[in-house]
Amino acid sequence: MLGEFEYLLLSATAALQDEAYGATIRAAIEETTGAPCSIGALYTTLDRLEQKGMVKTRMGGATAQRGGRAKRMVRITPKGIEAATQFYRVMRRATIGLAWENPS
Amino acid sequence: MLGEFEYLLLSATAALQDEAYGATIRAAIEETTGAPCSIGALYTTLDRLEQKGMVKTRMGGATAQRGGRAKRMVRITPKGIEAATQFYRVMRRATIGLAWENPS
DNA sequence: GCATTAGTTATACATTGTGATAGTTATCCT
DNA sequence: AGGATAACTATCACAATGTATAACTAATGC
Image 1: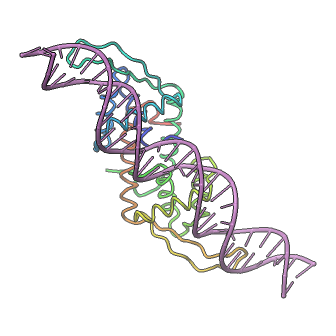
Image 2: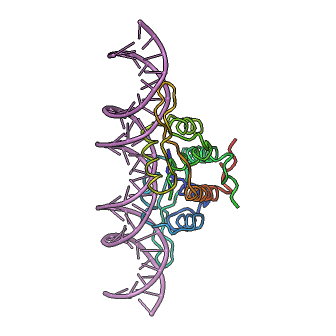
Image 3: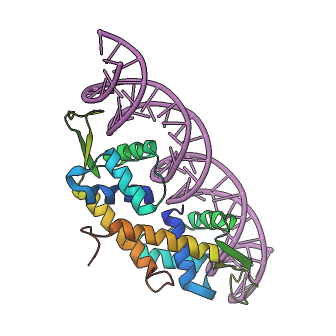
């Protein structure tokens, strides 16, 4: 099954659509968790997800701005969507009826 | 942070209240995930959660029935509730606005 | 050319997930 | 009584995931 950080990465990627790459994904994760996310952790997990066929990445062109190194753009695959859906469904189901089901 | 299996264990424990011990927790997890859950995995995870102070366990008396070995009863602690709440809140938040937010 | 900036890659280690196997304590049956 | 069976708990080894540090690359700006 998916891990929890893998899920965060997948969902951030899906939310960012065409703007998903290292830095933006990292920012998105930090915003939803409220905790710092190390960039190294992110890329290793990205590699693993790609190996499992849950995301596809391609190098974009270098942009004409200071530090404009080529970005590695990320896109979620159908398989990734499937896995994320399944993961969320299970978490949701596990929580039905519990005290923390409806957080403030 | 919590792992995903740890979360399943915590939520099953909370749901089962006074009837939470190895076998019942296992059955509950298998029901919500739809997948088999090995009993060894369960006890190791239980030990780790106890070390972290998220559950408390105590041995119950042996019951007078076939195979009536003493059960290790499990109860979630306030710290465990706190961690589970936090975990679910983050997962929920990560999912807002995505395609799989409202599964059928 | 050298400092600076935005970005990626490599690597090592810690934590969690998971199955196989063994051990304990009871009843059932002959 | 004593072996078969049943309902549990415990241990261990290994795989998969999580996470931080540090190094590398390619652009701009002075």
